[in-house]
Image (cartoon, rainbow, N blue to C red):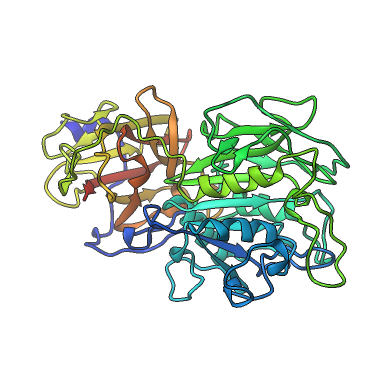
Length: 481
């Protein structure tokens, strides 16, 4: 009998029905607020709610907020908008393909504000100087996980412009390591605590990279004028890639500009705010024209990266033209009622054991729960049609645990997307014993960015040496239209 394969405690509470809720370190995400990368106009939000104008900083595209067009509706020169980022904003505006706004209040996702992140494709954080709140970090990480682009621009350690005890290095590292969505190095890099006085970091040689070779030009070098770098950790996220390196560095150290992915979204990091400074801004600020520095190609780097983050430069995989998308559910044996078919799973994971309960039917997938060091996996390969603009992955998850901690994730479940070679393309979510709760909760993610590709959806449960945590999955679906 399948239920006898392991010793686990039975659930003592009834499984909930269709209730949706947030618990612990994982976030419930629905597909109703997914950024629309297919939109004709790329929507970019520049943050100005975290002391981006403190001290000599003037990291705004215009003094008119939220809409820079109120200052000049048809800008042709950087001085038509006022701000040290006006060259950036004007260059995008002149293409006719971008809608730009500035956020001056708390960042939200899924709310009613006109600057809510669900209304945008890309969020730019130009050297924030105050910590993001817990709610803001959840909003930002969920936005990226659900398909948004995140542009993080740091400065050197100690650049605490408002003297509140935090600089951009600490603030951005806190965003990545202390959030309720995924704090397990979700982007695959950390920002170094350095103050590099000067330099012209060089781009790697990669003619196929859309950030280095995009519609705004070819990137050869950038500029450091008191900045920092990042340390890459591809073991945590294989998608992380260094594009521009400090002189004498390569590989996983000294990355001055890097890109990565998270969930269905994209991430870019730049180690200094000087390259985006165009030297013009509000009266009284001491600014430096790094944007037009003749020894670098900073404008091309900023603009190509913005385009990539907003959805340009996507790989179409093997998708062909001339096909149409038929609304359908793509996963086979999606409720596990056919037993060990279609899915590839660790022995005993797909079960009808009475020690746990299916949400519907008799069978379900049960990862871990042994109370000993265990790794269980569950995966299925699926082809997402290239002409489908919506691809919504959902599953119901129940977690119960014997762990008593309220702060340490001893046992984890990762939900990832892999290519045919087994390379991780993105981590959709990481759950843990901290998310234990009665009942099933539906989890939902957009996979629209993988249209035209054959990918593998993989659940990996890793359990520590003592005290069980059970990750129970049922009623999966990948609905496309």
